[in-house]
Length: 226
Image 1 (cartoon, helix red, strand yellow):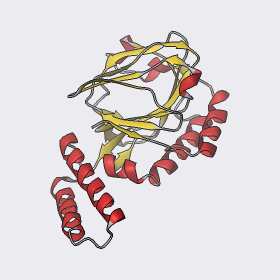
Image 2 (image 1 turned 30 degrees about the vertical axis):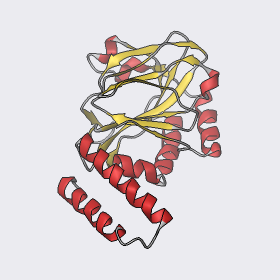
Image 3 (image 1 turned 120 degrees about the vertical axis):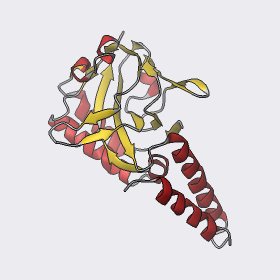
Image 4 (image 1 turned 135 degrees about the horizontal axis):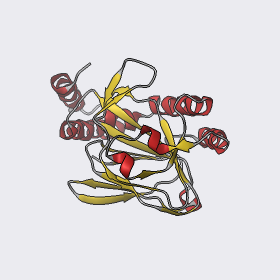
């Protein structure tokens, strides 16, 4: 499931992130690339434990905590600490699939990457190129979102970032280990949750709501891991 989540960051949070990253110590993004992706990766990345990355990552995590659409779609069990990358003129990232398991730097934890996320920080009019291209069962999708918006997609998807031809594309990216591992099951739960929300918004006392809510939670109980 591909899902566009608008306005993840408030204008103030977005401005804070941009100010931090404007003077951040960017380094060659290949330092975190896997064996295959290092061959096709050309971008800049913020060192994970620098002060700018930690503060901006905290802003992103706080924003995710209050976002009901993200919670419904990802059903997060663990969120990998947000990373930040920059693509300048001529930089790109060729077709690849994200590593299935990611160790969390500085800890003994590992996260299974069920869902990938890209949160756009640069205004789309400030750069040309740089589209995130995602291949899924419905074909190839090109994604270039307004600043502060985020795309979620299955981490199993083959994807790439097209070359930037003007300006700079800055984004946060991270992965989610979901309580529900299977993408098709997560999609069914998301659709059911949205139906419950839509009915409840229009008719909060509708007699079918308790039944639908029970079905939702029983499916999470069947498919989920705490």
